[in-house]
Length: 311
Ligand SMILES: [Ca+2]
Image (tube, rainbow, N blue to C red; front, side, top):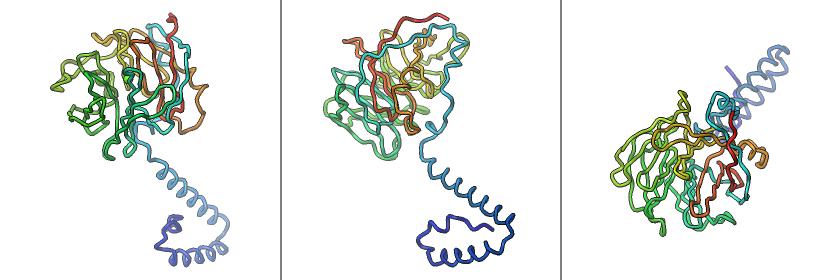
């Protein structure tokens, strides 16, 4: 039987705890050093256990950490591009960014985490939120797209999407889809959805029926963990979850056309554990601008993709 440190955290058991504590003090002076050391090791283990469970409130997607190396690109035959940074704008460090879209001078952002999921309209230069809607706590916001003056927003595991009027942010409908929702974009006709695998699904934007699916492959290698999406100059771009890269692929075949290495942004971001992964691509077709951010990032980057480097 252990003298669990948890007993001291229970206010309802204060009296009992005091008795236990005095028994504990008595026992400690009568224990031989080896027993005492074992007991303190057990307590340390329990404390670490408590700390582990208390800190484990992030969703599964952000719990999985790995070394964000680009080593998997070494086997790729597709070209890899570096970036140039054109501008840096403020971004809300409380935003767990899941979807980012540019539309008529503003950015629109969907954020995740239960109880912290929003749809926001944002002024680019200041980062100021012009309009926002909060999702019910049971929903974990995911990717979003704008089509025909409607905003479509996915949720992670609820298999429920929301439709909003772009001007009023009034919810005008819901839709369902199979499996998880991660990223969302549009080619101007269909909704295009990722689900964390290498498969991208085209949905009819009226009936929400599956039109077709493509498998994103670099040669023979499927590209898994496809996350936030953006339709850019006739290509689809996707954040690869937990990697500092964007993959560019054909909307018709899923064939990888190239990679964009964003690892240089790391040096410009806070080196704190809270800052999460790269996620968020928005394209301004009128100005040919590309905006990039990440989960809990305090900055939004306007970038230009530089000439492709061959292996
Ligand atoms: Ca996007």
